Amino acid sequence: MLGFNETRADRAVIERMTASMWHRGPDGEGIYIADAVGLGFRRLSILDLSHAADQPMTSEDGQLILVLT
Image (cartoon, rainbow, N blue to C red):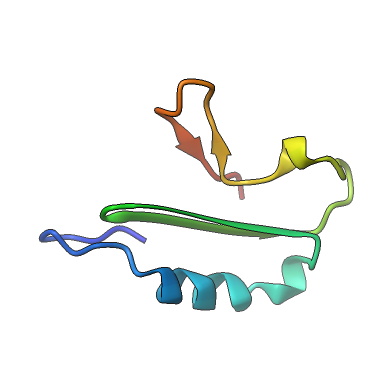
């Protein structure tokens, strides 16, 4: 979710969006919100069951946030 005109990302909207992907799996989900940017993810853990595969992923310095689809 990307808000325009100083609109902040809405956590409830992102939660509904990730809930709509329930078929992708019950094993992991994540949400990241920073001002106007909101990322959501849901996954089925088939290959990597560790927390290292949790998303959104954050770089070591915290400047980059990534969601893979």
